[in-house]
Length: 249
Figure 1 (cartoon, rainbow, N blue to C red):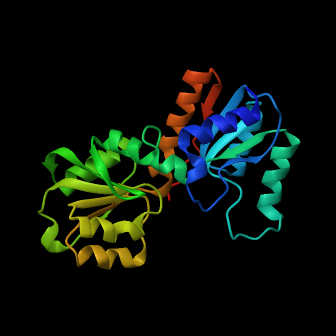
Figure 2: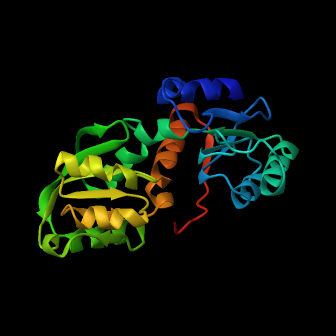
Figure 3: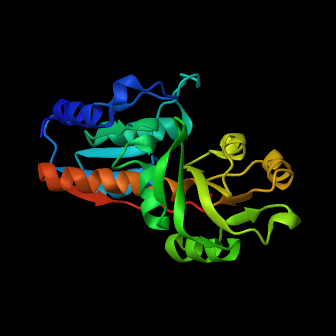
């Protein structure tokens, strides 16, 4: 497949041109014209690049790319090393960030709902989804389920008075969604699930009688890029490999 055609296909599917983002979505560094072997991953890093080179990849598609708005334009250190690897191996680097978070089929948030068996009911913010479990569950049950599915212990906090309250109505936001907890509180959910937690989140949650679960930024955004890769493989017969450079954060 032609590298620009691939960019256009994904841009159209993810409606990327209509979403204001913190980074340039699409083709960030141009490489060879013909693409057959594609590596997908969550975040660009040297380990992912080195493994892509070993696979003779023509393209890399990630959720967190190489360039961000308002960052320094100086190219040195690890950024230089990454760009050098990409250029020396004629690799196309693609990135889709927020468009991949909110997509109705491949999106990180939709994938989280599927994995956690949450019925999606709608959104309370462009980046915050809400839905319901089939039955009420305790916070310990949800911790157990998260641990079983994602192979990591989530951080949970709530007020002491709220610990016995069961959970059915939930809101969630993949990645660094902790600052959206106020939307969840105002909407009246039993629990909020996201990737990260900040220092002030603890007090906000404890004083508002809501369960809060931080499952890790990386793991909360692993499944969107996997889903996108599977779609490309099935529809366009590309050779897709997901490289999991696991990150505990």
